[in-house]
Amino acid sequence: MDNTQAIEDLDALSAYLTAHVDGFSDLKSAEKFGTGQSNPTYHLKAGSGEYVLRAKPPGELLKSAHQVDREYRVMHALKRSNVPVPRMFHLADENNPLGRMFFVMEFLEGRIFWDPALPELEKAERAPIYDEMNKTLAALHSVDVDAVGLSEFGRPGSYFERQTNRWIKQYQASVLEPNSDMDQLMEWLLAEMPADDGTAALVHGDYRLDNMVFAPDRPELIAVLDWELSTLGHPLADLAYQCMQWRLPYAAGMRGLGGLDRTAIGLPQEAQYVASYCQNRGIPNIENWNFYLAFSFFRLAAILQGVVRRAHDGNASNPTRAREMAQAIPVLASMANDLF
Image 1 (tube, rainbow, N blue to C red):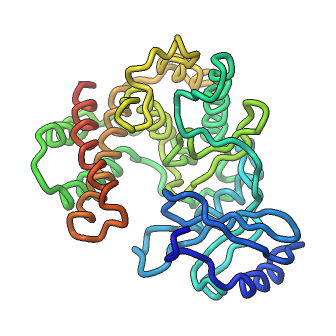
Image 2 (cartoon, rainbow, N blue to C red):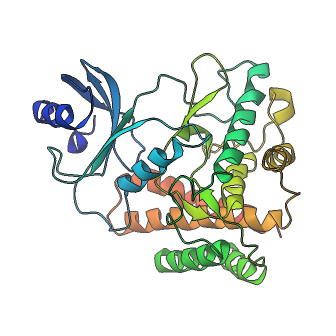
């Protein structure tokens, strides 16, 4: 466990949770899940059962980052929908034994798949996993945000224009060396911006395989996790972000499917996945698909550039990982340029 994020006073936390979580008693352990989460997440074992605690990191934080209260709010709201999420038990403000905001939710026994090729499954078991992801994404984008109380969860309208301008500014503020592919990509996105079609939906923001829990013995998605980037936005941003996976290289540690014979291993092609999504949502075929893909590549590259800049400035928590991200940026930019 990362000692800087360890929970040291279990007795105090146990007393707090007993007072605030119905039925909770006798906290025995709190083990941090593997590294990688921007919000440290702990597996609690207690006399009353097992739980998950997700907290803000310790120390000084950017005001707009690590909003675990938004995660709690959206998952609490989605229990009234067809999107599978854990049950929410309690949201704590800073006045608690940890001294930082956290929430407690249901622990679900299930499978998390880290490799998009699903090598641990038989060939016939793989496509149903992707079908389940697809149906759940369509269900998410079909949620009536008014009915679940999320009508003010974000700013609807002109999503791609606003996001493109935002990430251009972020990228330009953090870039260290000129990259002609990124410069060309930014110009192309601004020039080819589709007219806003007025579509707005709840979007996840990081919809990918390893943010999901599947049932232990069947291809049922039982929980979508990590809602830190969720907001009201355009649903095609989520779809294109996930479909980058078909294009990113498999061999370079980028968790993509590029270079694999998807048919041979039992996975759908990108076009099949997009067509199934349209069918599941009852919408026509998507126009300007390459724009949405290029936007997704650019957004990811801009995010990675921010991490690289923080490493350069001496503020990275994992400098080695930051160097790997620096190598990924030109790959992402080049792949986006191949789309136009």
